Image (cartoon, rainbow, N blue to C red; front, side, top):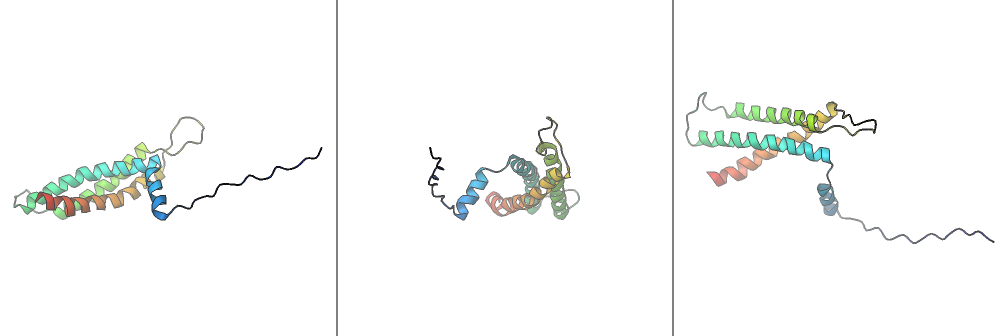
Length: 139
């Protein structure tokens, strides 16, 4: 008897995906911590952004509010609250992956950093959408 090594099976041709297809697949299969970080920051930014938009429209229509025109202060508070809330909420809802040593979830400053980094562009984009797209439709 002779022992022959089996011949390798022909492997199927691997299709190279285009840039747009790769990005769409990454978007559809985003990791849960990233989705939670973005969702928490987006919800806080949307709620505060709508309040800022209402304040802005009220001032544009000539409403006299206590303290006068405080849009710069309101905008500064909006950005600060969105960044802090994004970091804190993400720290609370996004535990680090466990190493299998029990069900205890660990949270480190990296969880908060993920929320902070997710909140920066979200705070800006929500303001742009509300001010440039929604405000002209309302006024």
